[in-house]
Length: 408
Image (tube, rainbow, N blue to C red; front, top):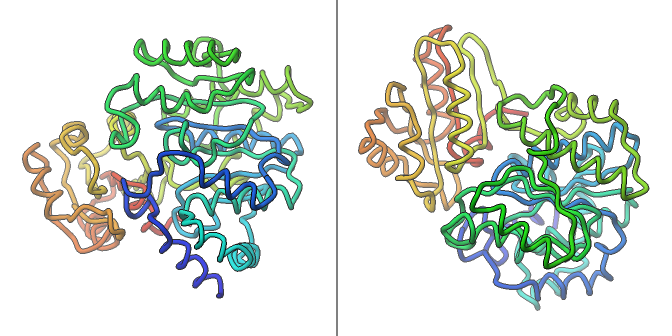
């Protein structure tokens, strides 16, 4: 199979959460442990930092990688989902895994995957660990896919565990309270491995403290310990918390491991995240006059922060291109959106995308008015046609809406 055929085969294997939602979530780690053993446990050959959290784990993972690259290390980076190409998920020093490596890995192990009903995510995790081990990375940043305790990445023993924050999202898997969700994310806390918490609430802090105590893991609350941060090319108020998390993580890494990262490395790394890692879709500007911003924020906490950021902008009229997935609690997120904007409702082009007419109907219950469009591209085009140069266009609601934009 060529690369396109290979990735198509992967996407069509047992449910992939990105496309199908709840049915892709597995209830234990049996499969991924079986896969790791089949591959001769490549995850044990790579030093790692493990990153979980409701929001900010992608930005934080890319910041960590960028800083370590500035310090001269060969850095693996495993994140999800991808926006344009599957290979975005697996990188070393910004360079994506080769198409050949992906094809050869799948061809070599395809019969094993089929015999054991491996999911897309399990195969991808195995591929990442195999690639990092073969390429002999100095360290790899491993971002959790969903949750923590039962995530396929949770077979690693990292140098440091990182949990950025807890918000309400993916309740069908993780629980419908902050405490329950924190319990799932805290599942990445390992015996005697230090853990950094980016943000906490009165509900989540006791959960983290209890889990850390149970594991005799030293715990650090970055928001209490770090007061100043240098600027970053990842703009957006929400990056302030992520920067504090990153700085605290390097304090631990410097003190407790052989890795050495200077203040200069941190300053430079935070300033060059996009250049060093290729991260896309975080308060990313796509145009000016009118100013066009896209962001992958897709749950209540993330959208609250991004919509507050929009309030700080100066503009005449606000145009919002909006699409969501069908398992989103719209009664929770739609009240956050401004009623004085013009909306362009669309459906992201995946099976989980919510029909634009249904979104429009639900939005109208919250006094959000606008027309529906057949695609993200068409909605964005109409917003650009309607906007004057002193207006503001925001595109978001889902990672998969941003994925359809011309953002490379």
